[in-house]
Image 1 (cartoon, rainbow, N blue to C red):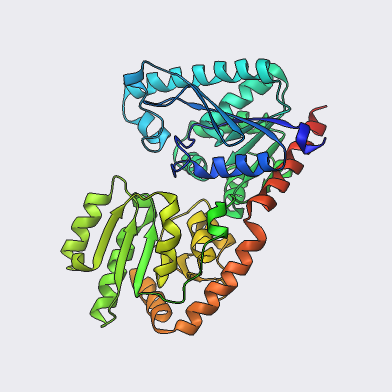
Image 2: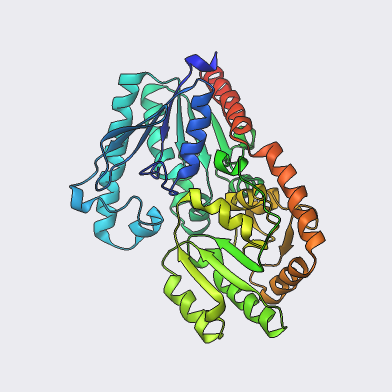
Length: 398
């Protein structure tokens, strides 16, 4: 089918609340890239306070469903949903209402817009909703996993049987990294013949970012401040560096439940004067921070993919990451960046010292990395792969 005639209904429990909102921004970037190739994209996402029931982002139409009275709509946009649901019986009841209203909203839009393909982001809750909708309507389903949903499978016993049901209903399963594909297959919840890897697309503003030759000695990280991101290891590494006489500073962009603990950790190590907590910033401000940094680090554990590494490389900044998770699709140790063992602050300090003291090495890694990601993570390339997946899903459903 010609892409200009293709209609796709996306299901997402996280979607930007404004064009500048970083939460779920990669879903909007993919929708934009597909729309730019003529695909008609509509998104179903949850409502929240101050949001309209229907709105448009460029050529992308968004329908937001209500799942409770306004003051009780607290599951979406406030953290990792399955963690919130686990906290209380009230949240579990809200989640049941969420699933029901999400499914009903999906069925209504299928009747109204007659999409050729349903595309669910995250296998739960969107994939579950999509699986039931596909079962009823026979519209082919594509599911993309992003990381947190796969991590839930590792930790929650009841999730595996449910995931097998959901993935069995999908014509195609997309993982944003090789690591996530391997996890699905190891866990035994998906058929290998229907699972493929397509990365998330980078925001176009990073493709246009200027690369600066004037860099500080600042170490930069951009992350939601949770334990999984390992920012405490980065603060430990900074303390080791400074004890060695390396005059480095750390800038942390992002917010989250671990911020207070991390600030206290910096004080305990007596490096608080050399650590800046800037909080969450609009995405438009990030290229300038990447471009001024000497190195970008995210010491997270089992990262689903790590789009921030792509952003940093496109701004000319060398990168360091743990040797785990989906980041290994981006970082080839010693070629496009540097890898170190999980939670090993001394190894991280060694890697940082190499980059900070050897500007030629830093420049080579950044240049290699930028060339590598330009070939693989552009919105145009990612959109082309999804259009192929949609068309095959339609053919297989006939």
